[in-house]
Length: 312
Ligand code: TXA
Ligand code: MG
Image 1 (spheres, rainbow, N blue to C red):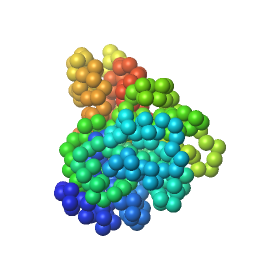
Image 2 (cartoon, rainbow, N blue to C red):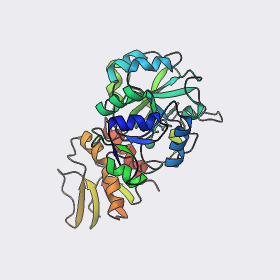
Image 3 (cartoon, protein in one colour):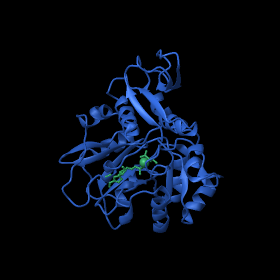
Image 4 (cartoon, rainbow, N blue to C red):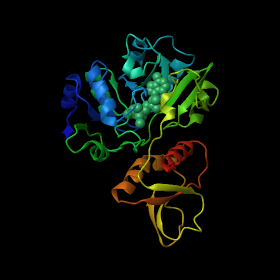
């Protein structure tokens, strides 16, 4: 069910959960001021309660109201990448962010999205928590039809068109004196070099503590029902579906679902979740994925998402 921005704001302020577009993926949104709506998000998604949510704000300046001591280079990162597809995990003022949002941690993840409709909405509603608008473990939603496929055609959605980035934000986490990438996303790690003076490492943060520091790293994501096989060559594949590129030649008996050109990771990212969802929609149970691309820059994100989608 399509909502106007005014209706969307009203629903959120009345404590309801709705889907909201961002430049990365659609989010399932609840107001930070409505704990019962926040808990409904976990139920709707089937999301484990120890996996915390990202707080989305209209302006970078608002972050300081919720965050505690800000790590080195925070202001440089905020100035360079917000609004945009970057999430920063920061120490938080625990009294200001409900424990359910932080999953009991003393940090909070913050993001200032750049999608114009989302920004207008956030200016009306104040802070919104938004995980991706998909059933947990399924591919994220990059258009209204994907949200409806997971939550039904009556589910309220602010329709902002097709997401321009198509994969989730990159998440940076301040750990042992430097920023680390705890989730690859729409910004490649090397983009941070001019700002930080180093390329943040892509890390699994190990924690001996009872509560893991980065719970999201524990869960499997992005999986279609189809079994995917990543392969750089296709000489043995005689028939079936190949997820590949327009500028490549594949065996004649195969059907190509295209991620665009092998030179544009941006297009491949933008089409990724729609492609994975298409497999399910068409009842395809097995597909081969062309993994013949460099494992660097934005291709890193694509490789990581495809590898996770291929895990059974
Ligand atoms: O692009 C995005 O980030 C989208 C759009 C809607 O903004 N949101 C999104 O949310 O991807 P979600 O919930 O699907 O993923 C958030 C990730 C999870 O892996 C979660 O564990 C991690 O962020 N996270 C949230 N708060 C955290 C915290 N305090 N410490 C460590 N990781 C955190
Ligand atoms: Mg998600």
